[in-house]
Image 1 (cartoon, rainbow, N blue to C red):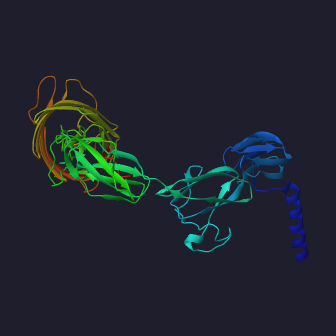
Image 2 (image 1 turned 180 degrees about the vertical axis):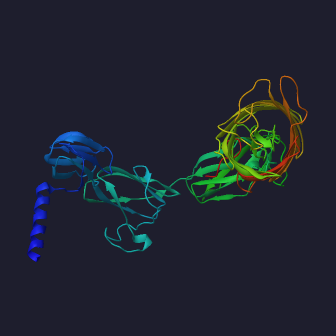
Image 3 (image 1 turned 135 degrees about the horizontal axis):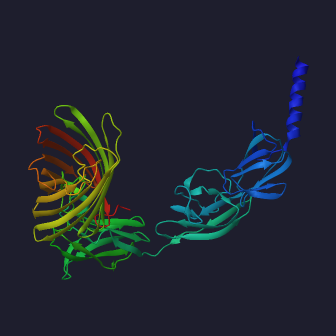
Length: 549
């Protein structure tokens, strides 16, 4: 029995050897089953676009499928520039499929970098390599010393064969750079020396051109970013239109290349300055210098009329409940929010759960464009796809506000939520602002019904009133809307009335605003419906605040 087993093993080895002379670096897997006089080759490699040669004839690049390969012995070669070529000689049989994977090994060499002092970062061909490293007292140790003492270590990296540009950077030092050619399977040692850099303010910019210091949190401040080449200190100074110094900050030490400082629109006594144009300078000096150098001037406008409404959204953009808000964000601002909720009737219980993702943008001082997409989840039906879009224009004269809104929506099915109102709508907006209180009114006309058809001269009139109170990080909204159905023959005096209350809170030191609302709808038949929704919005854009560096 043992003799038979040994004989079987020997026969199997001989059969395999007859089919495969060698497969250096190439994995060939055979799968039989198709009825053909040809072999099928599926040739792949982790490295895309590797060249494939069969019997020294170029057949294409990976991934490559050859469906009509005559059976027989073939020499297979897969190669790509910068990688070692891989070879195989194999017997391909008719009626079989072969999955061939060529694992190409990159051609590399070794590079040892030694510095005269610690460094912050290492760049190879413009790309930052690994974590910051502290190195290396030159000449104290050999290339292969494994000492873990920070001042005596050397940085070893593997690079591809060829010429490379090496650069080492450290704050307060001039960049040390060199070009070096690394041959395959060789080791190259590179010595670099860091030298002290002269102090220089290389950049100075403002995160926004105008802001309202009465806005909460980061919405009510301006950040100034700067870059320096070496350690030192700086002092921000603000001058009014008459070149009088109105604010001087505390000295700030430069301990890194990039830094920033904040101005909240107040003078040195903490009083908010009057609206107008102000000039900001950064007085800087390097360590060891006694004289300050003044930066280029930056102009910033304090605009106390530029408010940022803390509100959720509806089909008409940013709104107080179901009443579109005539207050717009500053030009260039972007608003995005996600909301979800549930609707319940007082008699039958749960009806639907709307979920929406909305955006609003102010390309001009007087224009807001918005869109929203979402669905409604309810029992016994397929959730529809709902898309809403609107454009809102607004102007002001003193404390009085006026404007108009135009919008459209689409729904792939029946929509039940109170926030899905019509296929096409238009309206006029009026309002007045006094301190933290804003009163708004809207008269809108809706044609068609979400998920239904469009019928000319038939729709709904909507009369809405809202009252908003916004101060600091908080905003509260009360709203009421009366809906009256109409046709070309008459107007029904009362179809339904909607009321709502919302609370929005801007998280301090952030641009995130969670919000929640509770709503009640009563129709002419006497039935009522309660709805609630929660959501979270984020404000961003050059008109509001640029994120910290």
